[in-house]
Length: 482
Ligand code: SF4
Image 1 (cartoon, protein in one colour):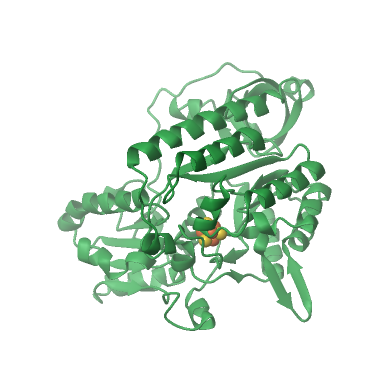
Image 2: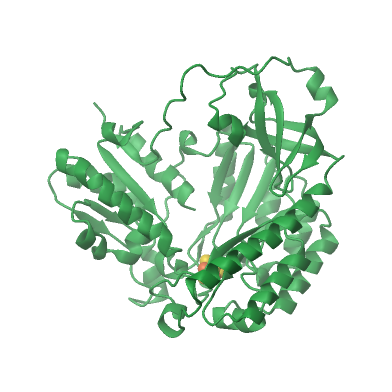
């Protein structure tokens, strides 16, 4: 969600003549797009604000902005802790950033724009204060030119006890399906081949208009019909909304990836109740068995929180059992971090010691790694269609620069979201290729581009760049037009 928000803010600033700066020292404005999901993410921003302070003292005209969820959550506290910040803008007000920057540069002083608190008015009034401006796209800001996110809805109404999202991103608001189809067509015309639909609970998507209701399954049908689009993914799913029509759409639509991220969060019913997740493990497993029945090769992934308020050894064991038995492709595992403004923060003690959280985190990671390795080994000997995304992490670190026809170690993903590494010419980036899988680790597969494809490719020797790689552009450092 934040990657997409950054893309949209940069797109809006570029239209005003701003350009990305390669380093903070060259920048005329620096923005931090922030996350509030865990304390650690917030601590990192306050540290970064501490580091930018000396630059701001040297160059008082430098505009420093804090954007996103932390801006919405902390509001005036940010300037109280870091008075050199010029802009505080919540996720529902990001469309205002260019105008607010102008105000700061024009001598208007510090600016703050945030949405209404969830309890500050009616649902409609609060919803209206969280505005979206999704059609502003900027291809240069995407993870790759051929992959893009499209937002299906903003906000969330689930109110899980540990989660700050409903507060900082506001009420759930769906976008009209026609707007997303038009956006997808525009993206495809710009060379995009894979679209990932994003929403906090993307499968809760529902748009009612003129007596007709469009749900996520209907939206997938509309997107699947777009010529030139190869792949459609959607994240993140809420277990109770994994309906039979959605599973059938994934099964039947050829462009929809067999990859479902459905966070379970915990393996114990008592903890799920304390978390206010709204389902039992029995219901989660029933959903999973329906998925396995209709989509036997689908990759299902999950999120887990360890060390939630009052979590006993036995309750943690229940999560461990779930991970060992559910066959998740992988899980994102987090130590519980109490968030002010949530029900858990207000009403439940954060009583699991940090050392215990850490130990449980490591145990669960190890268990998931074993499950992931076993799952990946099943692919050895198979041929997988891979969308080539770019250099592998190894060659990116080595600053390999073989030129478009030179061979490097590339990485891509299968239809079920498994990472595959293989040697191939760089010009294959952005294309779909078949790869014969030869080995597997817990987090990736490795293979060789299939014979028919490989024969047509010049197999040049790897060539490494003589020069050190240029520094990547600082994502949110912006240069004023000259
Ligand atoms: S469904 Fe997801 S985003 Fe919504 S409150 Fe729960 S954890 Fe947070």
